[in-house]
Amino acid sequence: MSYWRKAKKESDLFITGDVGYHDALDALESGLNVIDFGHYESEHFFYEILIEELKGNDLEFLVFNREPIFKFY
Image (cartoon, rainbow, N blue to C red; front, side):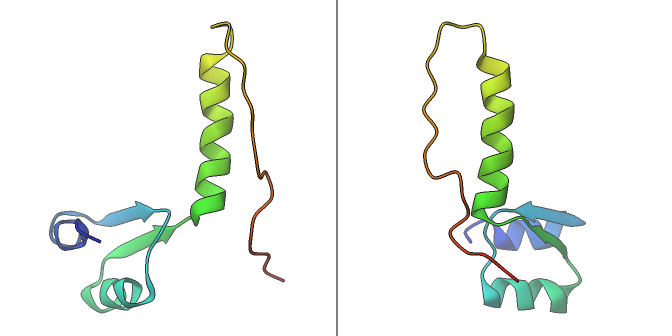
């Protein structure tokens, strides 16, 4: 991540939708708290908010792929 160094230096908590394995290990070692929502979870939440905000503006919404790609059991 291009902003990773800045986040480690200036943040107490870093919220993202995509943290790699090595970045997660680096955060753990440096004491940076990270919340990694994952792409599907963060995008799914955001599009619902966006649609609510844009309702009433005479727009048509098409939503594709509403199911997560990966399922954890």
